[in-house]
Length: 288
Image (cartoon, rainbow, N blue to C red; front, top):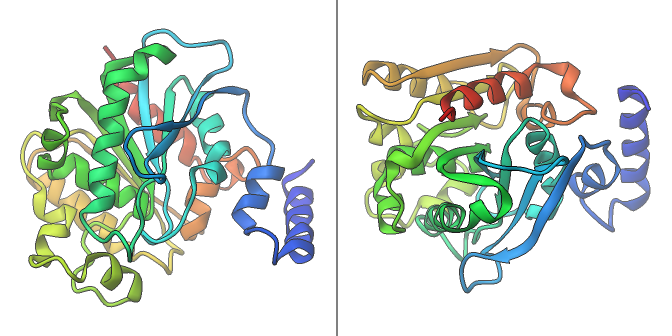
């Protein structure tokens, strides 16, 4: 099916089933996927029902591969790992063992709960990913939107990883797609519900934890994003460069907020080379 044909089929299905499931669920169910294996499903990394994860590996199996932990977006208040199986397939087909965790959501679980969950998922990966062919000394973080925030906050504010029993030096690289990193004051309901109760608002901002020795960072944004301001990526990249850290900044013309993550899929990969750019950076960062 061509991209146009698939998009039309998806829109038609959405119109028929709008009350039954979300467009993202339909996309996950209908979109063509890269060849890969879902090697683990619904694995607990903590006691809460939301503290579960899935594992994806290349179709031919895995041995000593870099490990890519991907956090999905949803304004810190929505999302489920099952809707991102296509991301797991896309990234695993590039030669990673991929971990996609759920995490607790605001407003019931505001900051720092979802970042602590991210750290706990990284700890699980460190302890168990060798069972799936991953190298626990080659951990990489990535995410889109609110998930990019989680990945970047873990990489910048290393206290979260240390509290989870993970040496921050094991994080070999981090990639953020359309992420909010410098968004105080909290001027929308999503950020107020997720961060408004924290007594030190600046402490919640990844840009305020930049310093020398942070992992190499890939920061990408679409110039048509009207959900997360492009200034988040521009300012974060400037701060990392100022600290002497390795950073690659990519701005994709004509790409909006959701388009950044959809560009990882086979159906929309021709829109922008997000997958190729991000995975090339992470493969280089994660080399033995």
